[in-house]
Length: 327
Image (cartoon, rainbow, N blue to C red; front, side, top):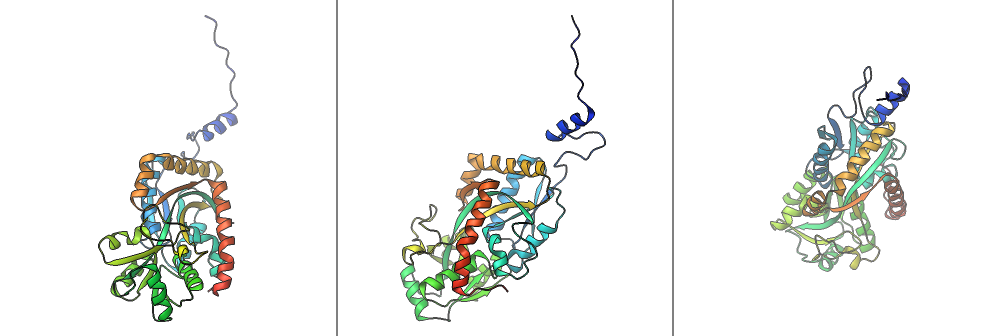
């Protein structure tokens, strides 16, 4: 038998090939990921971002072969955690799970501590959810029309709780005030969990809350849902009218994104995007999202950046009209 002719690949070519395949080579760092990955959630436990983030973390753990560990860094409307993620080493071991409100952070805060567009690579969108207009049992209104009438008759006497100034929940309430001609006083908390507690104890009477944060309370009759904030009736809440049915032009949707510091190496970003896409291609995971009140809404990097830009353009005139200025 004739010997097989060999065409040796130069050492540089071998290393490039190994790196492209995610293979560790002698004298080089271990292939990514070789240790746990931190996923910063810039809100306290118990809210929609945290609830979904934990589902995503478990699913990414299965795809990446290393634990994806949630770190809650709440406060300042998400800015504390988002700034921490932006300033973290860009090595793929710190990532961020947040909401679409990040795209207007600089319109709401003079110094959020980061530039949402320059400091992050936005990797994937996983899901969206309507917020629900909920009231505690001290509010006499039983439906959306009654609530609008009640709030108009009691300007300045109702309070609404949010996870913080400038959050999507704050903007949803501001847009409601603008279109309904009401004046519901804003009470910012340090996260969704504390704001829900405020609703139950009567510190506030109203919330525009992520569905996953209040679903159990609604089912138990502890709070009352009157409407949803999406542009149309929600799949999970078909009995609730969209606020836009009574206030034309109203829509305030909440969706969730996965990001990393901008200098994160391109092969690592590609690996994270591939893992996110595979998670969302899993029918069992999509079913789990819907069972928890989320609507699967995957977008990859290019589509996600366009969606964030569009959301910013939509909210900027609303902020100007409602008088919300940078803090």
